[in-house]
Amino acid sequence: MILTHLILGEIVLRTPKDYKLPGYAGHYLGEHVKKFLGFISVIALSFSLLIYLVLGDKFAKILFFSGAGAFKPYVFILV
Image (cartoon, rainbow, N blue to C red; front, side, top):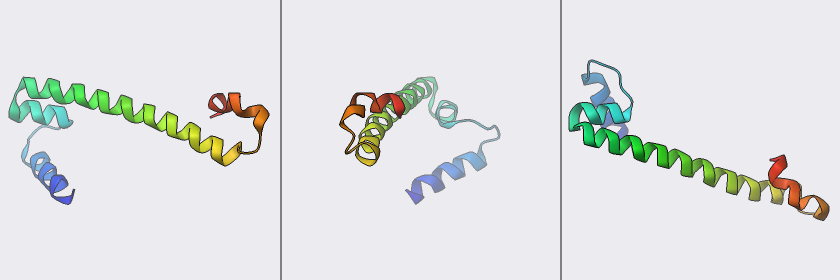
């Protein structure tokens, strides 16, 4: 992981303009790679938020409502 960050840091320092990761890929590798990384970034963000919601719901059920049987259908709304 450190090596990946060092490589990205070198790329950022040696590039005259500031970009996000898909922008650097587009600058050095071409427009197709930029579009691919942009798409993958959106998909990864969406799935990580979905996983956060599912696991957050389970965590809240365990933490707050383990003994409250009447509130179980409303746990997801409260979280």
